[in-house]
Length: 113
Image (cartoon, rainbow, N blue to C red):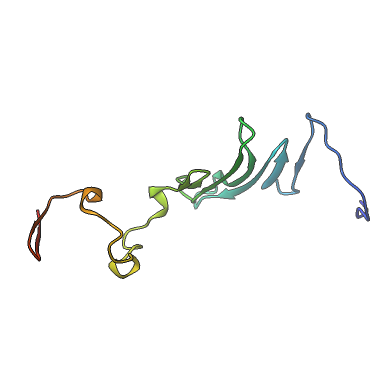
């Protein structure tokens, strides 16, 4: 097969582009990159395109199939244990009402329960 020197490839709604190994597909308004987990099972690792409401969409999943990024942002699955450290948080940016535990404050003294 020859190389495309110039011009466009026009797809109909019933056509899609698939890589030789089947690990990348372009179908309609979505591009998918397929990965394989440690057992060789395929999963959609990256999906880029438009959702059913014609909104731009980027979805990224890890090897376990957990979604780590959606159009709404980073998910809790993206935050591995000990990834966020105290020195990474700007002073004064997390308030008491955002904490999942009781904070008792008396003057300058703070205790966590």
